[in-house]
Structure formats: C-alpha cells, structure tokens
Amino acid sequence: MVAGTPIHHARYLVLGSGLAGLYFALEVADRGPVVILTKHRAESSNTRWAQGGISAVFAGDDSLEEHIEDTLTVGAGLCNRDMVTYAVQRGPTLVRRLAERYGVRFDRVGDNEHAPFELGREGGHSHRRVVHHRDTTGAEIERALLAAAHAHPNITIHEHHTVIDLLSWSKVDGSRGCFGVYALNSAADRVEAFVAPITVLATGGAGRVYRYTTNPAVATGDGIAAAYRIGASVANLEFMQFHPTCLHHPDANTFLISEALRGEGGILRRADGSDLMAERHAMGSLAPRDVVAREIDAELKRSGERCVFLDMTHLDPDYVVARFPAIHARCMSVGIDMRKDPIPVVPAAHYMCGGVVVDRHGRTDIPGLMAIGEVAMSGLHGACRLASNSLLEAVVLADGAAQACEDFGRSPPDHVSPWNEGAARDSDEAVMVSANWEEVRAAMWNFVGIVRSDKRLERGRRRLDLIREEILEYYWKFRVTRDVLELRNISLVGSLIIECARQRKESRGLHYTIDYPGMRDDLAHDIILDKRSGPKA
Image (cartoon, rainbow, N blue to C red; front, side, top):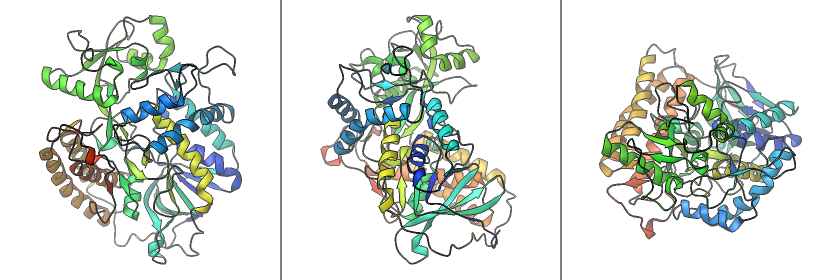
C-alpha cells in the first residue's frame, strides 16, 4: 500500500454528493474534469432527507425585506446582514434554475409546468415561502441533480471513499494551502490520493455526534474535522439545532417529522391534550425551533413523560395524506395513523449552524479549499437557522463558489507523497471503536444538549479528552477503517462544540445555559477557533 498509492488528478475535487456538491460540480463541469467523492452511495446525503423545502420569496404578499427580517430575527443577533441579504436576493433565481435547468419537480399550483410554485410555511416565517416537492423535497433535488451529474461526461463520482486528511502545501513548501485529499477506498480496502487545484468541502453536518439525531449515518462532521486539522478557522459550533419533532418510536427514532406539518396547522400537545405552545410564544406551535425544542425539553423533564404529541387530527384527512405522503406512510408503518392519532415526537440533533468559516463565495482562509452547504459557516444562520434556509444556503454558496473558484487555488505539486501507514497493523480491538463511539455520543447528549451549564460542559470536556487520547493512540497503531476515521472526526468535532460553548457566556439562539440565562450585547460576535486557539487536532 505504501509504494502503490493510486493518485488521481482533477480540475475540481468535490467532497460530498448532496445539493451543494452536485450543484457546484454541474456548474463547473463544462470547464474541466470534476471528481466527486462520497463515503457511501452517491444519494446518501443529508439533502436526501430534507422534507420541508427551500425558502425563497415568490408570493405576492411577501417581500425580500420580510424574508431578510425573519432570518435576522431567528438568528438572534448573530447573522451577517450582508450575507443574509445576498442569499435572500439570490434565492428566487436559483430556485428557478434548479427547476428549469436541472429538472427539479417542485410542486406547483396546477398541472402546468410554468404555473406558480405551491408555497408552504414553517416556523419563524411570516409568510408562505417554502418551495417544496410534497414532503420529500430533498429526495427530489437529489434525484434530479444526480441524474444530471451522471449524464455529464466531465463528472466522475467515486462512492465508498472516506476522507482521511486534506493534502497541505505546508508539507511541500511551507506555504498555506490545500491541493486535495487522502481518502480510504472502502470497496478496495486501500488509501488513494486525489489532487486538484480546488478542493470543495460539501460534506454536510455532524448530527451523529449526538446520540439522538435526525441525520443519516454519514453525518459525522468529517469536513469540519479535516478543515480544522489543516488549519482552517471554524466558528459557532455551539449552535447545534435540535429539531423539535423527531418521531418517537423504537423502530423509527431517527425519522424527522417536518416542520411543514405545523405550518399547515399541526398543534403540539402535552400528554393530557393541552396546547403546549399556546401561552409560550406568539407564534404558538410555529415558534422558532430553538424555542420549541426548549419548551418540549422542559415539559418532558417536568412531567416525566417520554414524548409530546403533534396533532393533525383536526385537519382534513385527505389533504394531510396528499400533502405529506411519505410521513403518513412512515407513521402507518409503525401503527400511527396521523389522520386519527397524534404523532409522538421528541427533539433530536438536526442541523449545524456553525462550521468552517467562509465568505459568500465559499472561500475558506486556506487557499485552494472551499466549503459549501451545512459544513460551512457563512453568517446566514447566526445563532439559529430559519426553517428551510439550509437548502437556500447550500445552493447560494455552491453558485458563488462556482463563480469564484478559478482564482482561488493553484496547480498541485509535481510529486505527491504516497500514503505511509508505517508499522500499522489490522485491528484486533474493534470493540474499542464501538464502545468509544457510543461514549462520545452519550457524553454529547447528556452534557452538551438542549440545555447546558458550565458544570456539564466541563464534564463533557474531560470525558472527550480521555476518549480522544485513546482514539488517537488507536488511529496511529492500526490500519485505518471508515469506523475509525468517523470516530476520530466525531470526537474532534465534539471537542470543538464544547470549546465554543464554553466560550459563550450567555444564552443566545440554540445555545441555552442555566448559568447565563440572558443575551449580552457585548457577546454578539462569532466564536472562532483554529488549531492555535482551540483543542488539539
């Protein structure tokens, strides 16, 4: 393996195959070869599981200014207004492009393909502005973009490739920059090098850092961890959004119940049937996600119940099934008929509002390295993401990166060092990986969850420090596997989340601590970490 490391060349190297990665690849593919790496199947991305839709202003009674203000309000004083304005202004054009250029079949009012988009409403939005495809918007976007990517002769997708580390110019000539990755080809059980002038992180989020999450198994924070190790700045990782409504059932504990159900009139209720949010927020069950998640968490702790309930039974049953066919089918598969039965729900880790620091074009502070989508921190979301602004950010950053990438990298070096595994051997202690995996996720859920305190954060920090020592020793001792790489990444991202949370001595947006229950004007700034200021990489 040492002498025979395969080396692949491309003009653009994209890590991840969700909306952000695929859109970028399609926009630049006419200029030169694009290689996309994905660590499972190409369709196994966070995008695929997005139910609600993509927010953009199309309604006659809506305006760009109101979308901007809704985003800023939910972001709790930490949004970058310039980025918010830029994203909201670009939204309608890019949504149309997804439909017209790439064939995404958004729902429309009528059967005509030129009819107006059907618009939904979700928490924090003052108007209907969520463009969707029933309740499977992400899957439809993934279908259309993957079909276009497979049809393009300049795009090659390598499945079952897990990033190990980014290739750094500092090890070649001492300069700051990135020119590709080492990746584990799980299918061939070998390490390969992929080099390119431009490397684009589109690796999604980090929900799997937590025990309970709506995210698929691939969401282990790989891009954040790899960027941090090469020296990129990361920020605001304390702002993990816990979605208020994940299906509570032993056979479906990772299934998301879309906020769009509340947008169509669903009501959150306590076990006794009373309205949970009626006296808690002016928007009731459509309050922003951080507010609703905290209220559910408090109710469960107060009552000792295992869940609360999302009630759709007062709505027209035929409309409920037509509007939410996938959610209805999933609930029916576990014996819940949402037309007649309130849906049992609990909060779960859902979306990372922080990430690798980028500008509006996805440029990081490492030349040659871009980050787009959930892995990035552009300033759009601030301290709490407005519902359905995630897919908006993904396509806006991907479009910006496609415009700006040509002047951001440089040609890779003539010689690329082969992967050196040294004296590493096959593992005979796989149980250590699974045990530490569970311990990291349990510690994050118990000590760095919806409600935090200095004491809990310190306990979490100590636990992860000990675990990370074991993981790094294991990493250097044994040959790499996908499980080991993911464990290495979730433990690092967990430590970064804790450190950001420890530095924020206030409660703001998604970060709520009992030691500092109010917001402070002097702390209305980003918490930025890199290898010099943060945990050991």
